[in-house]
Image (cartoon, rainbow, N blue to C red):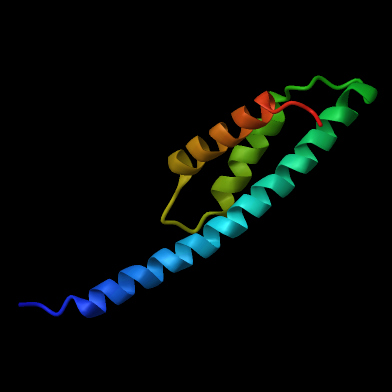
Length: 93
């Protein structure tokens, strides 16, 4: 019978690391949202439209360049498409 105690300890260590990363991600997503909302308020003053497809394209290109894997273009794009969609639907403060 294989020794599962080491595997169980490893699993729990990975889960703890994920929990810590999730805490950081939530903080960073909320920080990003604050900047996005601030930009949304500034755009009309600058005569800019709220939706800027060129800027979205830049974001997708940039995140693709940042990634060293294991997530690459399509997976990251799906995550960011959702993030941007949620921000568009988030009411201003």
